[in-house]
Image (cartoon, rainbow, N blue to C red):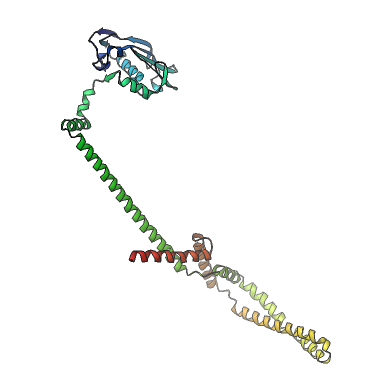
Length: 348
């Protein structure tokens, strides 16, 4: 790679890549000669182990064959000016790459690798600060920079500026943004209303389910007891009959009659006669109750199926509405009031 220099007066520092042949770094009328790039030092960047490139005043040309490293010099300068860099740009086998761009009045340094660093005149800085300083020092133009004129946004910007319509464009942009925000708010309101309608419909469905269940306090406990009795109806009938047969024996009744007769002869037996009489009456009442129980005792499989079906419905209701029949009844009453108030409000 060869370098040549020719003085062209005071100019803003520039760098240009022209594909396979020539790159140049120069200056423009924005800055004095004191802002010129003097030297670029590169170490362990891509394929470059170490390279120092010195620049003179005016026009500097970098020439060489394709792949000789002209574009790499521009890439190194871009990194020194705060461009994005990564560990993949470090030369194989090295831990980090370092670039130092020395201008007349300032030195920019950059390191990239696992741990990056940036400095301005030896003081720690960030890549953003390098870019801020570099904006006032160097303008880099690529071989396709003119293609920006083909970009529709660039064309619109130039046309609006030529027509002195930038203020009108800003006003239209503001109005359009307000319109977009209004449309978004309207959409949110529609979604909120739709969600409210869906929630109302769900509440109505819950109320209808609770009404259809026809809940009664304690029903599940009563049905549970009846289910147990129905399952063991045969054994209960056997035990009940044994008890009834024992109660039918007249030993207690005969004893009560005998003690009553004795009490008429000796008042000291009056209390015992009364107690035995009460026991005899109580036993007769228990026997009558047992007879009715045995008459009503059922072992009908159809009834057991009805009980199981009803308990399944009640268990489902309890799982959904608080764990008990009582809490489900409270939810039903609450929904009655809530939906009734909503319907009254809608009809008002």
